[in-house]
Image 1: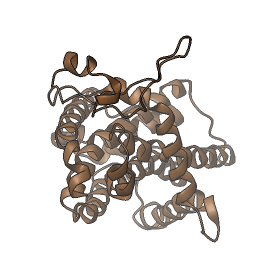
Image 2: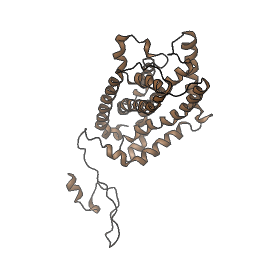
Image 3: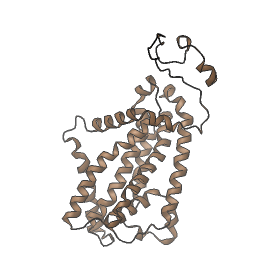
Length: 302
């Protein structure tokens, strides 16, 4: 049935309408009618529809934040404990024992500044990958743009990042290190980290609906990916011949750029950041198309 034909069916006989029949009386406004149309193809991503459901996106994001620390003994303090404990382990193993260089910075600051964008990315990716399976009851009962669910899993990670970032500022004040004039670029690198998580998360979320072992693979991939990213070590240790491969890892540019914008120093990622951005855009476009292609089957197999 075409869109024009659906619009001409009276409401009381329209099987596609989700609204109650309107009573035509003088001066009474008509009840809005929602018409579900057939897909126009996989390239029609319905991004405008996501904006129309922005209130639902806000609700799901805030719900995920509250549920994450519900019935925990110390609550949201885990947001601070996790990066601090990881920083201490890195400081002892890499800073003290392995004598890892830190670009002239105190190693605890160097490690913590690398952990923050990385944990933002890993938390957002994990939340997006498991989001559809975690909301299977909602998907099976109510219609809304499915893209909202992985988006809510990603946006919730920003709350944890904001708390950890405040701890980093306290540590910087303790070591008498102040933000540089390039601090204005921080939101750009944070946006790149979130976009990378969304690009990979869309693929992972859609595949996780069909293949439930994807959630186990994600944990391994995130762990391996961290060691391939200059979180605990500077990118200057990477030989020149491997720099192109490093550029294909978008999180390398994010971590190095985050340190540069906040702590200063000579940027070492250079033009390879452009390679990272192109790689993220290719992943994101492919992920959106694949997600759009498979979302019609989510309610049936989830």
